[in-house]
Image (cartoon, rainbow, N blue to C red; front, side, top):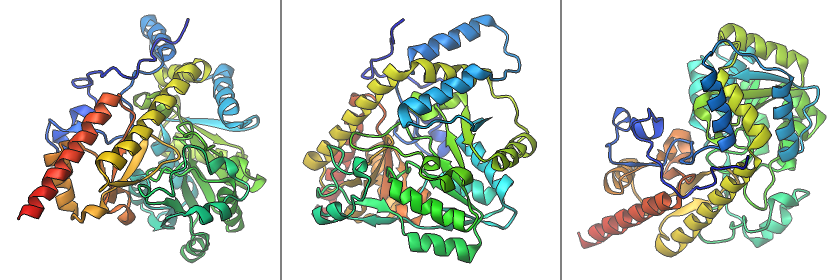
Length: 432
C-alpha cells in the first residue's frame, strides 16, 4: 500500500480537538483569534502507515498493558542505521513518555538536590524548568552568537565539510545574524567551578538551529569525560536537518562519548505524533542504563509505554521514510520562502538561519522595542502566537521563535500579518 498523506498544502481544522496549539489560547493569556505558530508540532497529517497501524489497534478493542519485543528494537535500530549511520547493537533502549520526562529521570539518577546541571542558553525552556523543579541549580555555558564572513568560513571548515556549504549556507548574507558557537573554555570552567555532574546537550540545537559538528562534539566529550560528567543528549530534532548539513549522533563521535551518554530520541517531532508520548533513550554504558532505568521505574513510577505510542513508533520507523522525506522537503521549501520574504518584504526582521529543526529564531532587536511593545506588536496587532525569545534564557531577548511546519498558505498569512503590523506600527511612530 502506498503512502497516502503527501498533501502538505491542505489546511486542517485543529480547533475543537483538544489541541494544545490551537485550543488553549485564552487559558494561556492570548486572544482566541491569534494564529498559533509556537509549540513544536506540525499542522500536517502524519504518515498513512501510522494511521493504518493505529486503526488496526483501535478496532481490536482491547488496550491492556503493552510491552515491546524484538521487532520494536529492530524498527528503532533500522531507522538509526538508515538515517544516521548509527549501529545501536549492544545498546539498551529504555522507553519513556517522551524526552522531557527522561530529562527529569536523568536529573534524579545522576545528581542530588542542590547539584548544578549544565545547559547552553538560549535553549529549550523545559531544560531550565525541569532542573529547577527538581531542586537542582541551573548553570549555563552561554552560546556565542557569531557573525561569519567568508574568511571565517574557510578557516572554520576543519574536517566537517558536510556542515558548511550548499544552499543551506546563508551566514554571509545580511539577513542572517550569524550562528551560535560554543565557548569551550567557559564550558570547562563552569564544570570545574560548579562541580557539574550532568550536562544537557541539545543536538540539534533548539531554538538556534545549529547542527553541531563532529569537532565540536568531540571537544565536549573530551571535557565531560575528563571531569566525570554524564551527558544527556536531546536529539529529538535529529531528523529535521536541511540540505548541506548532517546530524552527528553525539554518542558516535568517540568511545569517550559513547560511555558517558544517554541519547534521547523520539519519533514525536519527525512524524508529528508527540501526543502519543513515546521516547527511546538509547544507552551503551550498562551502569548508566541501570541507574537511569531505576529512576524511570522508581521515581517516575513508569514501566510499560502506552500502546498507541509503541504501535505508532514501530510503524513510523518501518514504513514512514517516504512521508518523512516529502515532509522535510516541504518544510525546507517553507524555510526558503521565509528567507526570501524577509529579504524582500520585511528587511527590518533578521533571523538565525537554521541548519536543522522547523523552528526559526527571528531577530526583532532591530525594531528597538521593549518586551511589552514587541508582544503588543505580535499578539495584538499581527495577531500571532509565537514563542518569545526570553523563555529560552536572557540571550533570547529580542527574538521570537516561529514554527514553519505548516501549510504554505498559513506561513504566508503569518508573515504578511507580521509585515503589515510592523509597517503600520512604524508609520505611526514616524508620524508622531
